[in-house]
Length: 153
Image 1 (tube, rainbow, N blue to C red):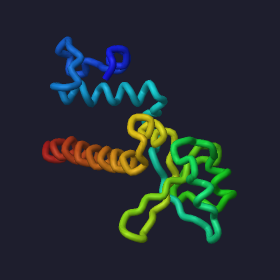
Image 2 (cartoon, one colour; image 1 turned 180 degrees about the vertical axis):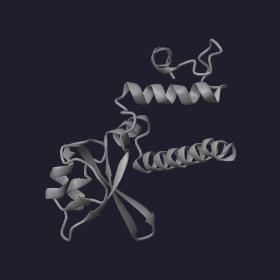
Image 3 (tube, one colour; image 1 turned 135 degrees about the horizontal axis):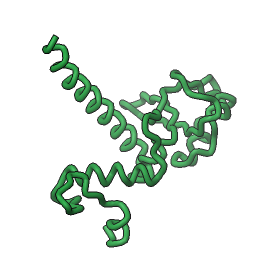
């Protein structure tokens, strides 16, 4: 990491007075969060929405530039991509095909926060896995914080 990039992005997230992304996991995670924030992450927004394709949808044309948000959800709907979850028509999105097993492809709409993750690592698979790990971590955190409240009743 260059000194300039380090000075712009690294944060002292553990409060020990040093920005140490190599030896402090807390500073490393905080610095990644800072990177995401500076690159347009919107707290609380979805990363992806599952989608399905109408017969005849031109997938090759839609995924040709898989790392940019050239379409809106309305544009993708007009081209045969149907979101399977709630998302406004004016939201920028990209079609993301992910092969989950040999010959089996899932389709997703990558939204702004998906785009931000791919600025950090230009891999759609990486971005989707990062999203899935974050959801699992959130679920575990919520379960752990809810357990003591349930026990105190």
